[in-house]
Image (cartoon, rainbow, N blue to C red; front, side, top):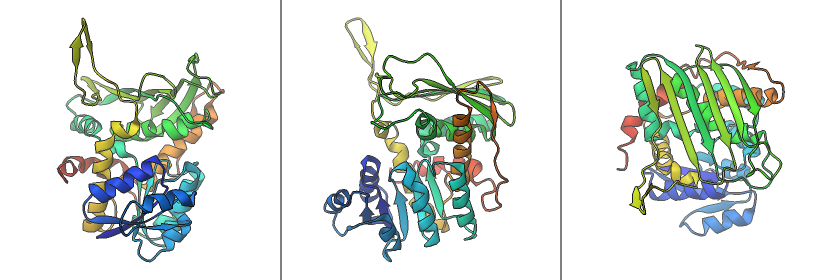
Length: 354
């Protein structure tokens, strides 16, 4: 039984605690912590045997905690990851891995010093059935080489304090990861553009934005990023190949026909859109730790690659130029982990707990 401590008792933290307690086999959440101690105390009181710690550092140091799940605010991720690696504990960190590529490099150095993987990054789209099937079709070669990706990430609204740069580093970070994974290709250059602004944008940040990327093989990617689109949480992705296209399916929804109209609901909550992917992701994480002694899902290298791209895109804003996306050499520890290994597990993982 894997004893887990969760740092961060906000929406995703509470949801992961519920998931790890009620759905994922082979583990138990024994501790939680939050910047607001009262939040951790409130959550711990809902579960038998769970202890609330005052700080994330105290939770990481607790002898009963074997693995750490980090769901705290983005700026705190890198510090907690480094602390967990220093303690030699397994760690699952929600995206983004860090606020910048420099902090990701520190994490990579700390993990490689152990000589084995301890970290997995929470890029849950790798475990979504739709994306997994897209990946299978692309890798099969039946449609020829991938040429382009058209994608969009639309959300209903953002909290106070949201800034333009976060549209890339926090929101489109998922597209930066999943497009790289779908293509099995690293990025060459990129640019972010400000386009005509939506009347729904009233809080001072750019909305929408367009992200443009070129990969090392010459494939082109465009991503529409809207963070206040008013109508729902809508994720779209189309890969254009030499012999056809492959599209991400919409989530299951009942179609209603009435009053001369045909309609179906669009989700408004990201947790609902990828609820099954989260279940599969954490089930697989716990299972691989038990069976292999290390995770094999999205790695620190994948987190680093996404952060390098995000940093470059944010620097390109206002320059009207494509900037080179430059990465350090891949450490031997990762090899093909990020882009090759995770893709092979989806089919098997889908059956866990069903």
